[in-house]
Image (cartoon, rainbow, N blue to C red; front, side):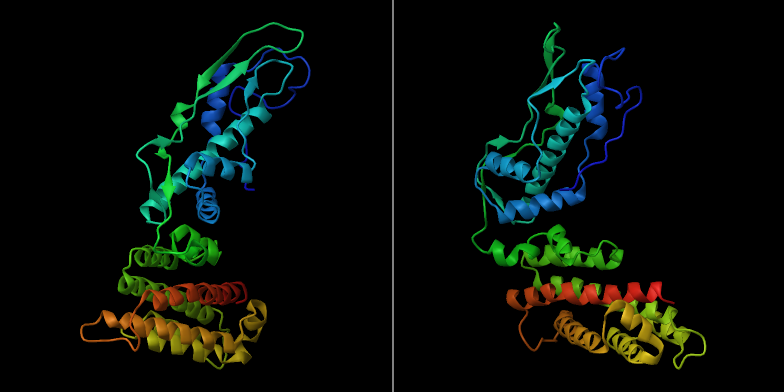
Length: 345
């Protein structure tokens, strides 16, 4: 489970709350603590999307409750505000429960926007009530009340349905850009590649296969050029190949991507230059040749955007989905090679 780092807020120490203290946390300070620490990480939304599709339930409240259980984010029943009790663990649990529920609600709307799930009711749910607090502990008097958490509510349809046109078990990574990039699992992905892949997933989700191929082709081009530039910069002086010349060719707008891919492959074949990078990355020359086959398939299919050009096979869902899924290992390979080249000049 991904947990948030909780830091003390100004005017309140999270230490020395065992035993008697000179002052206790007020309900206003407790509300401020919650407001300062509730955060929704993008990773949390991605985790929620994957859970929702893999563990789907048509009743949204039940689906959210199951998700909160899976990440151990249970809302406490009561907050004790007394000098003898440390309130921070309870407040941290409140923050966690709110943050994860907000992530789940954002995930639901994101999946609806991508037509991965559909609203099945006009009624809504997802609101928070109030958090009860008390200053009463055994052996002492005090007061009890509560404060509203309604400001953290995101309403979502109380019933959901899966589309009949897809199988989540098979198509899960292609239902949402976040899930696809989670499958790719490359935190340091080049922004141009990430943006193109996100657009490609959105396109295939809406049946825009040619547009998907255009964006997939852009991602492939960016990945190959970035890898080639990293290799060129790692060529030592006096080598059998000219790193500067390779870099210039890769950046030349009048050199087609097919030619640029060949330049990268031909350069990498000089293992007397790149042997160390091959060992560091684990990417063999044959692996890069296999990546060329995938890139050529993408390029040939993408070229049907030109008037009068027809691909060897029609750009059906099955074909485009296969190329998009195939991008995962191949772009991961190119990224590993580029990373090794940057670290091993």
